[in-house]
Amino acid sequence: MTSTAAVRLILASASPSRGQLLRQAGIAFERRTSEVDEDALQASLIDAGPADIALALARAKAEAVAKSDADWATGTVVLGCDSLLELDDRVHGKPHTAAEATRRWRQQRGRTATLVTGHWLIDTGSRRAVGRAVGTRVTFADATDAEIADYIASGEPLGVAGAFTLEGRAGPLIERIEGDPSNVIGLSLPGLRTLLRELGYALADVAA
Image 1 (cartoon, helix red, strand yellow):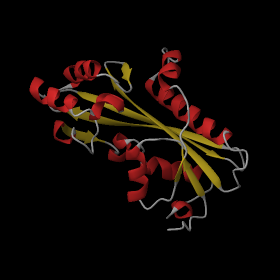
Image 2 (cartoon, one colour; image 1 turned 45 degrees about the horizontal axis):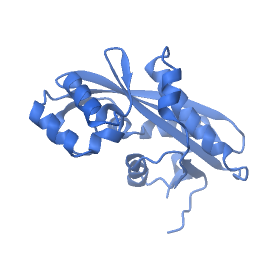
Image 3 (spheres, one colour; image 1 turned 90 degrees about the horizontal axis):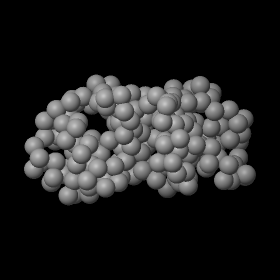
């Protein structure tokens, strides 16, 4: 179906969860992934705080995609997002391996951490850009070793920030969310609304 959106929204992310959030909210978008090395960039920001790291990663993704096409028309915005989990004053991105995911779950079970998502929105016509980091507190169940092993064996947590997905198999292991739940899934919908408004657009402009 052809979109009737007045503004072309480009999502600079391969995340299926972010795409699903936008679709469920009735927002039209196209997807372009960047080649940003997230691990290397995060390693270079070791002295930065969680919000600054998440924003830097989101900005790098949005800028890489915005620069990849010199023919973006006026009325195009590019959205970059990146999420990480803050626990014990440390930030955790994707675990990548089963061993690291297991270590993290044993550390975070029965505790509360903050899922921080950075958002960076670029208007390719005016070259204006706005950013926002949103934090949501997540309380994990005191999962047993067997429950953790079963979850890790699913493979789901290896490629996601914080080694869990609220909307997936980890749902039964999440006891409480304080704040914006869409942010935990990977993209704050209220945050996106705010960023669009800062650039002079409305939700209706990106409606499917």
